[in-house]
Image 1 (tube, rainbow, N blue to C red):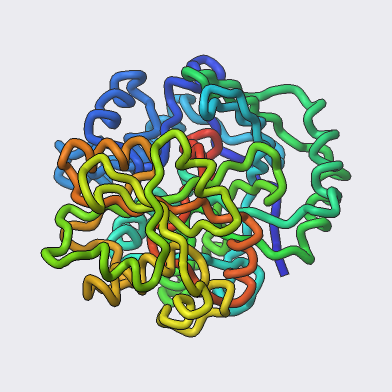
Image 2 (image 1 turned 45 degrees about the vertical axis):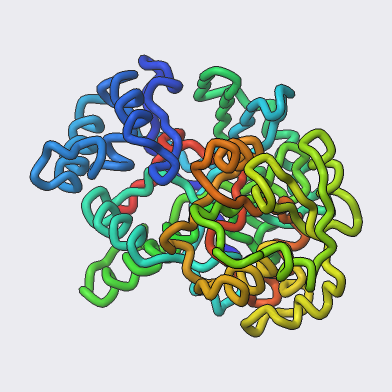
Length: 420
């Protein structure tokens, strides 16, 4: 059963622009972007969120981040809200030149193992990021970055409650380029209670933050094993969006190969697919067609582009390894990972960090990489549907790493959840 609760957030005081002190999450930032964030404000949250990069001059960046957090609280840069609340962020952004908007509801969620079925993953994780996030949790004893989860609200019950919350005054506002945030605190006890009740019987699906969720479980268990009383460690900071929110944007993650195989890949592909030449202007429409699977760039020449349509999708799905359901086997990403990368090229379909394999989210970026010679081939996938993500998770299956990309990422530092 989902236990989603209001909390007393630690927030930046209004005397400094919120847009100057929040940041994207640590795992999407380049070194240049980190330096730019550091230059915006001496109190930018990147110093807490990614200390190994932002405080690299310190002998112990994690301890330095913890000292900074204490300093900022003592100096009044960050202040704890007096009353518990849910926090509703009306997040605006631009995509393909058009304005969009989505609602994100922040609160704290009681941690439960995957097998309890209340919170479900959809991707595999890697050990490296979890070790870094554990050290940060142990130092800060606070969640600076929310885990992003989705919920099924086709009945519209939660949407109706949140519509009323949009009348509350804005307690935090940020504008940066085409992005904006309007944060409202839901403090009314009746509305908080109604929201908690509506979430009790719903499953939550992790959209972004698998590593952080597993790390929070790890941290909680270590505290318990050490005999430390820390009720706050039983919870983690989350942001929730309805799976049918009109502003929810789920992108594909395309695969790039640095080198093409020395043998004729076209001949191999033609055994399993119709290999149909197309051009860039018709690519998006072709991928959205009922019979398409995905596209490949660079097969015959750097500027060549082909649509790959399975001769027998059921037969290809049967060659996908693992014990996932049939609908899971038929997904583009699994056919590319298991059949093309795995069977054709003898790569490990479950290992995302293989030499010569890289990932991009933009179709144009993938095509430019092949045209410039930075990559030899690009596999252009269709975005996963939210309904497919829910179905995969409900079935207990997981997608390959680097499958989904929810745009934009939830920002870090809008609200912070102290664990002590």
